[in-house]
Image (tube, rainbow, N blue to C red; front, side, top):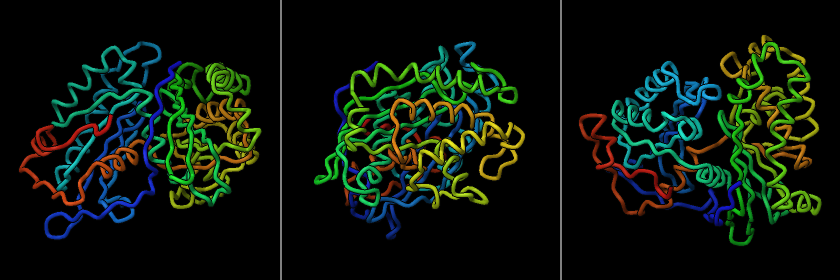
Length: 376
């Protein structure tokens, strides 16, 4: 388990000065998150209060498919991912993006051919992709959720926050010290679990044949990774003193929230920043176990692509809540891209001008014209 030095950064609701581009148009910032399951792109414009999303793209690429068994990224998974990255490059080429970051996470960290794949992807797309550590993932997640950490809509300020992000190949947990008066937060410690929705689904077999006993085995397997972190940081004692906010940012948590809200289809505006009662979440997880995979696939808030990973995600969530039981969970539909954009905004001089777009995508996205991996 890692015990890094504290990371500190301003909250996401810090006001930013609007930086006009040429002709009075706002500057555009791009962030790409290449995860174990999904490839995600966000293009955003700077505003007085932060940013607004101009364009976004998400594709399920399953880059980490088979990684648990082979230790390698498969040819099919790499081909799917390169195709998605080419779509991202095309979208970026159509925009005058002045600053851009691209990061890769657990699948590329773990695979023996992860760096070779990154080099192949860079050769095809023309932009740099940086493999970041679990600590950097946790820091970006904290940055993206900082305004939820400090939001007094959830009650009196708390001196601590516990944030978890359930991914495809890993789960990041951040233990955070908060300062309400300064609206700042610092990372006391973090834990990167080698457990994600893809790794669990592969380790415990086809989800269409998952039994209740198999589900409990996933919970126990995940819970075993959490005890040492608890013994070091004594988070339960802070929970008993009502000093902690629990924040979940992942497809699992947002799916549970959408089920409990009984949404006809997923709506980010209704889910992000909502309060998920733990008792309702537990009931929803039991309902999902009883539904079976075919009914989960048919649910309008889930769909066939995400369905195989819902119960593994629930098992990870349940293990986390078993160790750190809290009455409510703050739901965050935001992630690394949000944190990356916010860091870029914070580092951008207010009088800067937007770069003129070169004629070809590859030159537009090269390290010569774009800032990469700001603050990582």
